[in-house]
Image 1 (spheres, rainbow over the protein chains, first blue to last red):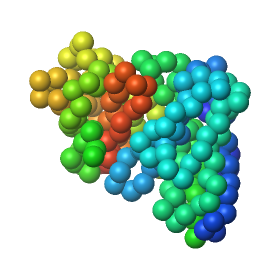
Image 2: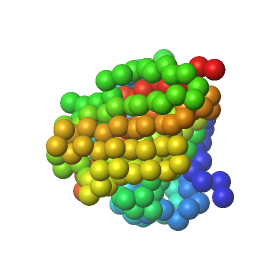
Image 3: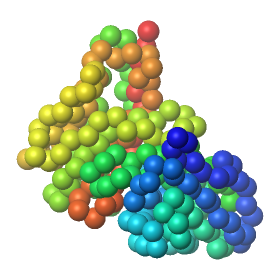
Image 4: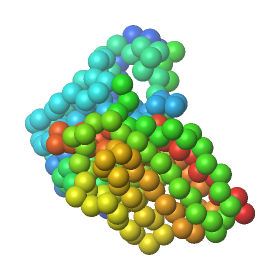
Length: 112
Length: 111
């Protein structure tokens, strides 16, 4: 089992560019999540999904969109990147709310 | 408005001694609490959890204590080992599937 994988691992964007981060899990989990981690702030939830075809906003959703077309994949999109979106992005998945979330290795994004 | 707070950014402990990490929360609707451990350049990994119906949960060297009246939980690591050097995040959830994380505590275990 690969667990949770994230693509790409690193990316540098210019302000205004767009990109999509891909998260894939092979554990047949229903719930998937996107977080960002910034220094001194822990992890903050961007968007999440409780099943295929569903998405919901988290704590810091502005500037991001998501899609969950397949159960195993959860995509995070930045339509027009801003320097404030420079961060490390983590994807996670879980079987249910009362099960622990499994995290991917992260994507380090820099917006210039 | 941070609902989960870890007020100690760092902790240094000698190998073999006890590490105590603290976490406070403000949302009385939280009913499930977790601790995660994170090494540099890796994603967080689950360590231990506790439901609000319990006040203690043990797993090997790790014990989590929950004091609901004080809205406080703590993680005890006994004995501390060099491999325990990492960032530890406290997290909590209510019924809405979302986890709220603290800012983390960096633990350094000295030989």
